[in-house]
Length: 87
Image (cartoon, rainbow, N blue to C red):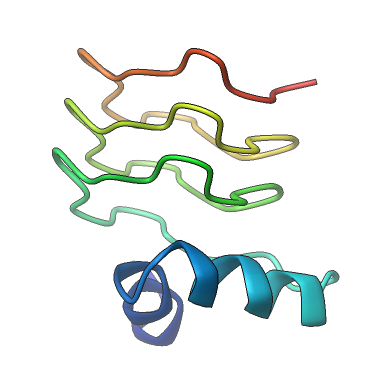
């Protein structure tokens, strides 16, 4: 289950998420099983995030950093990834 604080920060926007991660680089965002259908996550730093089981259908992840993110069993149907950083 997603950490409510991590989910709220993500919903507060790109700057809130990215600034927090820059200040806390060792913390892994827990967004497991989060309902993020059609979410605008363009350019979001999701590196190391636990997105296992997340509902990301039709979400826009263009330009997002997904380095070492856990996407196991996430619903990725019809998502937009290009260009996204995954290496």
